[in-house]
Figure 1 (cartoon, one colour):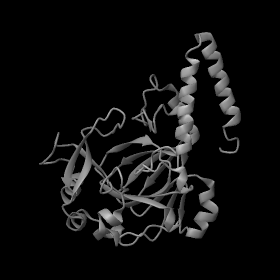
Figure 2 (cartoon, helix red, strand yellow; figure 1 turned 180 degrees about the vertical axis):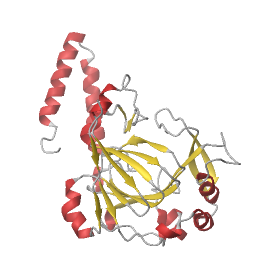
Figure 3 (cartoon, rainbow, N blue to C red; figure 1 turned 60 degrees about the vertical axis):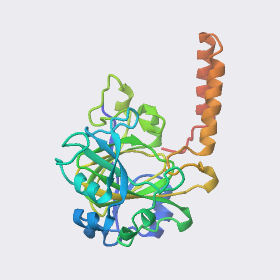
Figure 4 (cartoon, rainbow, N blue to C red; figure 1 turned 120 degrees about the vertical axis):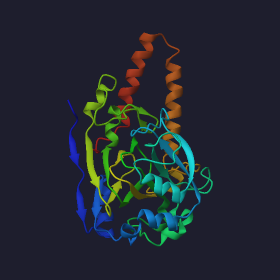
Length: 315
């Protein structure tokens, strides 16, 4: 049995005031249409990006299969001049390649020093910055990063969550996006922040039987669309065409809640990380008991967490 499918609402002409006061507090994905994004949606052609983006080296993912897997790392990292990447990513077959003539490319822009600096299109691609306007749906001091993304046609990015709210601005091309509520985590077979289930359209239910219960929220993003992805919502992205997008992440919680070493926006909040460490220590302590006792007290712990920590108010 397949889980329920829900279409992500599409709204046109949403003002910043209406978004922040009425839509944002609902903490659900939304496709926003008709926002003023600047001239990028018409200007950012392959030729224009190749010319203006320049020849600075960028680190990219190179995959020979459509479904990228961050857990098993079924891709390799390589570097290319930005203009070469744009040209290759727009091709289906390559005269020049690293592994195979039909390999696929994925760029997730990085800061100057990825260990210390966040991605920001204003710094890494200053000549492109003037072409794009970020929707003013959050305060400037909340800004965390702006991530430039380029994908080959057909490439699928693994299901994962981020700890910050973000807007995915689809500048060119089309993306099919499937999202899962944080409450579906129990069905997604997580390894850290990522799901082990790669083929979400035809999953191996013998290996992942609970995945069939996961309720999915779906949308097709076209050029000029903006998707609001609330923090902790899992998302899986398929590029149906060569496309360029920009994610804008912002801190919707006080800064001290976030890991200060996080430059990607995907490290768990510091309090959550501490809680997981404490839980791991508790489980190691339980393992000292005979199986009958460890099983019993582990079940009591689960019931205690459900009673004390689960929110009764979220859907």
